[in-house]
Length: 233
Image (cartoon, rainbow, N blue to C red; front, side, top):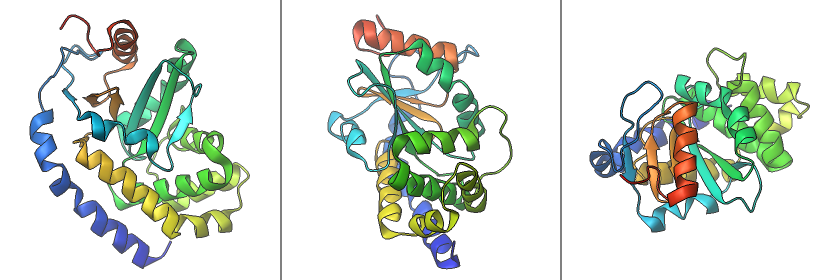
């Protein structure tokens, strides 16, 4: 990946704190009483419906689960976020326990240029292999047994091990189409105030941070029961 691409990504990443400043001020507290597996409150907020509805129209979302699911959960993640790795390790159990759940994985590489490089490789893989191929790459970089820093070269190596043409993926990762898809995902995350990774959106509610598998399962159960992330609060 060329130096000019890295410089461009660095410049785009630098604009995100400005975009998110207004939303961040509203998102530090709790819209509903939600507690994580560690017993600590999880920051959450109500999102503008017109903005939340844009997530499903983003290009490059990796989809897991049935298209006609009753509940859709979006996770905004960074390939170098330790809590994103913890969430990825719990993903299979979450999917198995909730067969009527659809999950959308959205890139939000706000921690480093290296994270953005890995995200670009994933988006390039998705262009040729769809969500199934991208989910395998996601697991190869963040799933059980993984560790270390993810960047463009490491993501390319993982893609090659999964059977993708490395040169073709590298070329696609530097394309305008991939760059615009990543920019759209990151811009929407910033406008929604999702400054923590991972962040979750279900309906018009957002959780900032990983609450843990038990708490996330409870949130999904509440959404199914009362259409809120916490019933009766």
